[in-house]
Image 1 (tube, rainbow, N blue to C red):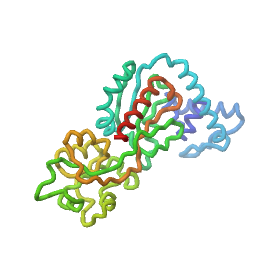
Image 2: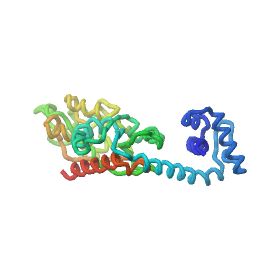
Image 3: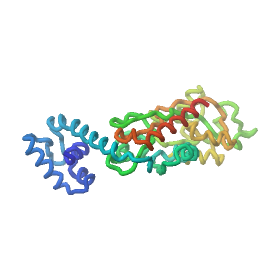
Image 4: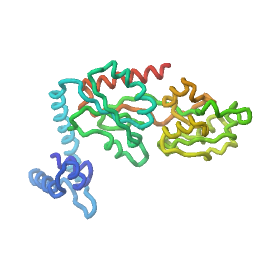
Length: 307
């Protein structure tokens, strides 16, 4: 059953074998035994592909449901304490929003040993839906594991909570505006370098300077000029260094604005099609450490949005 579920998910005996730590031949043999027992074919074995049959498609959801039930039953038994909590998050969110708040989490939940990791794979990208599976822990993982995603929120099979939906707005160093090159109106951006954050690198999913300038009805500014950075951390550092004006997600720069390291030259912002989500496998959602982190995280985000 496990070999069938893995092969059906990957549509590959080889990838299923890698997941199960056996050989492709062993996976193929297990599935042949299952097909012999059932008296039906579960896969069409093509020259360079594997195709699931209608009988296999009909059986797959119930097989997955069964594994979920097994995992949930085991979780009920092994919930003996809070223990370790592994959290995966986008680098910019982890460094600039989450880490500065973790002391409050530790004070509120001293029995939870939180371990934070970050990866660019925690950001949804066009044509890379598989990255969610890479970020999510296996159901049989020994520790509690959750993920914070910057994306669409469409993660079937997981418990999903929206943390916040930030907007993109301009920020820069207070040293940048001068008498010779002011930032009194959006049209003054003609005289300044525009910093581009390409965390998502998809105009439909991450608005850029073109969209912001259109929202304030300013023309004559070259929206394509200026340095480009592959993630928000680099773009924000360039703005802090006075290299230009960056479009940034407001939650990532609130501390710098409050401390005077960055200023907001114009209050206008453009909404983000993406939001930050807490994504948890349903089988571990009720675990005390996971539930405590979820409640704390949503309270923190609520305090931010209400300020």
